Length: 194
Image (cartoon, rainbow, N blue to C red; front, side, top):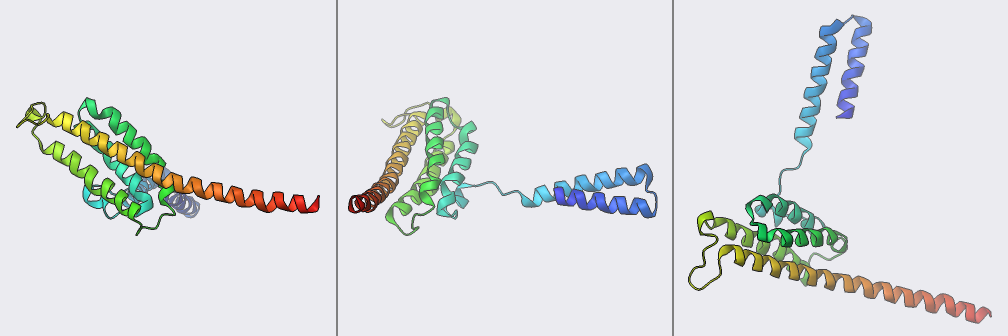
């Protein structure tokens, strides 16, 4: 946007030096700059993540896309699910750093992909498919839809926490191994010099 605005300003300044453009020319240049900025913004913005496009997201971006998708679903969810949606969103914010170096063929990567791109959307879309007037009614010995949604979100929240712990413990073990290596190597050298 800045480059387009600057280019239009430079062209207008040069044109003004050659032939005075007066107010109409200046206003036209400003309108052209506004149209150029709007066009750049429209072309450069990313389309909204949908449940269908979650599965196509690269693994390091999957948790961010899932969080964006989940935030857009929030208005359709009951107030009782708000705390869990917040907890899940916080956990999803911590996940990208752990996913960057993860092999996309690893079993834990497949589990994360299924959880965030299939199971979470299926749960929420299943809830949304229940008519609003029936969501608080228990049916056939099962809990009402609101309760089922909250229970399902609780399971997903717990699973994300477990996967984060699993990925984090691998990083913690690597850090501990590196620390032992450094301590052995450099403290051992001090002992040899002393």
